[in-house]
Length: 396
Image 1 (cartoon, one colour):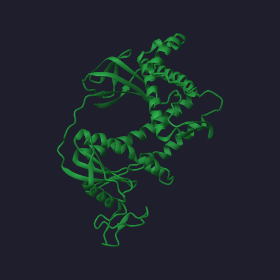
Image 2 (tube, rainbow, N blue to C red; image 1 turned 120 degrees about the horizontal axis):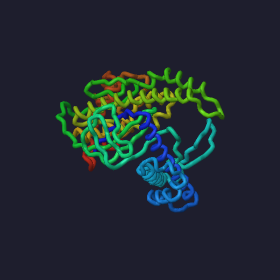
Image 3 (spheres, one colour; image 1 turned 135 degrees about the vertical axis):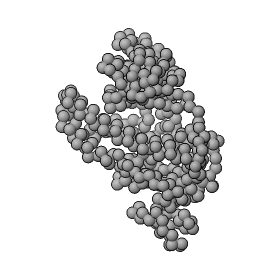
Image 4 (tube, helix red, strand yellow; image 1 turned 60 degrees about the horizontal axis):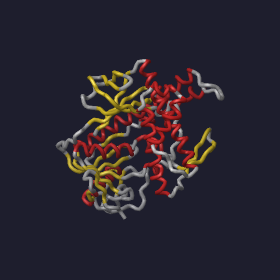
C-alpha cells in the first residue's frame, strides 16, 4: 500500500464543516482520556474503544446534540486512536519498568509530572484531524466523501477504490490522505553498492564521489521566523481573549513553519528516491539523533538535516524499487578509520575536514573517507528475514 496526501481547496461552508468534524473528534478523544485517567489512577481495567463508544452514545451525545451534525466515524476513530495510544504507552513503559517521567511545563514552571507516553488532552487547533469511511470515489481533481460530497483538490487523484480517508489541517490548510494499492517495481540499477555518510556541512556524501549539499531551510528562514514570532508576542495580552490580529499573526508563523518543513521534506524525498532507484545496495549508519541533538552547539544543524526522516524514507523506498538498505552500527569508527590501509586514529576533531593517515600518508575528504568505509562494511553484512533491510555485524 502507498499513502497519498493532497491539499484540499474548500469553500467557507466546507471548511466550517471540516472544523466541526475535527472538534467532534477532539471532544470525544478528550472525554475518553478523562474516563481512562480515572480508571488508570484507580488501578482499574481500562475500557476498550467499543465500551467507550457505547458510553459516549448513552451519556455524551444526549447532552451534546451537535454531535449529530458530524459523521459518527469521527468520534469512533478518535476512541480507537486513544486505545492504540494506551497500548503503545503500556508497551513502552514495560520496557523501562514504569520509571520514565515527563515534566509538563507552563510558562517555564513545572505544574505536573506524568509518565512518559501517557495520553494527554488535545488542544484546539493543534493537529486537527478526523476520519471518514463509506462511499468514497474520485474524479480527476475531485473526491467525494460522506457528509461533504464532492471536494476539490489541488491536483489530480488516481482512479482507484478508496475505503477510508483522513482529513487533517496544517497552517489553516486542509489535506486529505488515503491509501492506494501499490506494487513494488524492480528498476534497472545503474550502480551497485554505495556508502552514504550523513553530515551537517553536506547532507549526504556518497562513496562514488557525489555530494548532496545541506540546504538548511530552518537556518535560511530563521530571521524571518524570529520577526513574525516577535509580532505575535507583541499582540498577546495576558488574561484576555485572543484578538483577530493575534490569530492572523499566528497563522503567518504557522505557514512559515509549514514552508520550512515542506522544503526539507521535498529535498529528502528527491535524495532518497535517487538512491533507491539507482543503487542496488545502500549502506548507512544507525545514528543516535536524540543523543546527538543534546550537543547544543550542533543541535539546530543536526535537526535541520532531518537524519531520522532520511533513514525512514530510504527504508520503505528500498522495498518499492527493489534495493537493499544495510545498517552499520553507530559504534563503527567510519570517520577515524583510513579507507586505504584500515589504520584507526585515536582522536579526530570535528574541525578536521580532511582525513590524513600517518601510516600511508593518504589525504582524503573526511566525509568521503567515511562513506568508503561504510561501503566496505556491506561485505560483512547479514540479511534479515524481510530481505529488504540488512543489519551489519556489530562492531566491537
